[in-house]
Image (cartoon, rainbow, N blue to C red):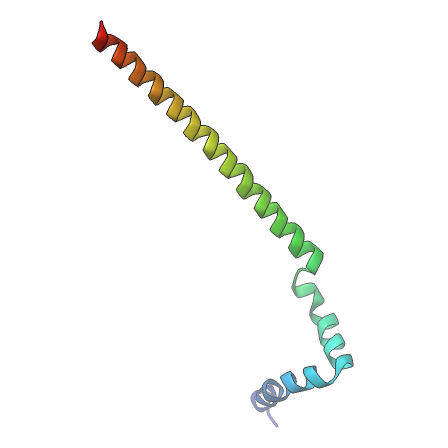
Length: 84
């Protein structure tokens, strides 16, 4: 059996074997563990991103408020000039 045929058989049989054989599933997970982040690391990244989004949203809100106050100030100044 050549390598391509072996790969095809593995692709066909592996899902069922992983469902049926917990020891094989654990072995495969251990072999590939260095290829992906664990749950805690993934959650930490997720919470870091959420915190960054919250900080960005708060900063944008402050900027909008500042612009709004400045615009109001300009309108009030303009109205005073027209009233004089």
